[in-house]
Image 1 (cartoon, rainbow, N blue to C red):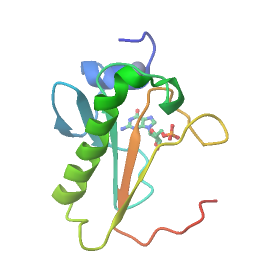
Image 2: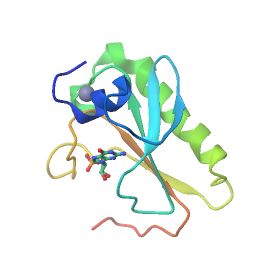
Image 3: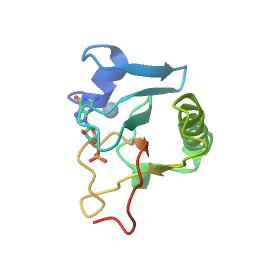
Image 4: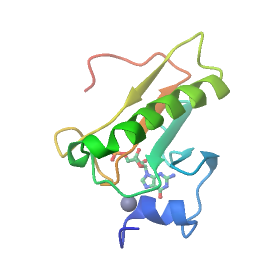
Length: 115
Ligand code: 5GP
Ligand code: ZN
């Protein structure tokens, strides 16, 4: 656990969150400030700063994050309407919490390109 990391604290249960899925490797919880009817964050239980801090050794974990995002989309019944999975990375990417997380967004038409 990385000290003073908000998402490590959520994994540890020190900060409450609405957890929708958890296993040995990942935790998924609802975003506190949802940008869409479904807005869930999927994070690894082990701290990694960002996608850019990930290495070859994280390959299966990154795959697991994506497949968890897929599973969540299915649970939220987003299959037919579609959804978006986003990894904001670094400052221009809009990353504000430096514990890697995949946003799963759905339930409304999302515009493209992003603002
Ligand atoms: P980023 O901007 O880094 O890609 O995304 C961080 C996300 O974390 C934001 O969408 C923000 O609303 C969410 N967030 C920030 N603090 C908390 C919190 O304490 N609890 C939960 N559930 N989400 C949070
Ligand atoms: Zn962390």
